[in-house]
Length: 82
Image (cartoon, rainbow, N blue to C red; front, side, top):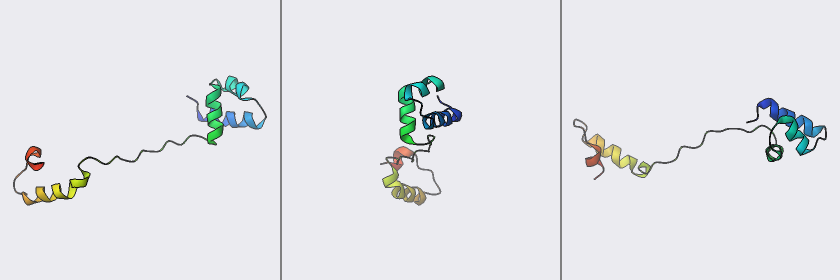
């Protein structure tokens, strides 16, 4: 894995006219890693993924209404999903 300094070094060496192979040797990574980094332009950004909808999200209002209708008692999930 390349550190932030490694990414900066890749960009600096490329601006100085070094070849991809030479940059890879200097940084200590594969040529394809250098190539993909230069194609991306900048340091990689790691973002959180969007939460995936659950299978029950389409029925959430019905389930909440059903649970609220039986408020003094507790409804087990096996009965609630009938």
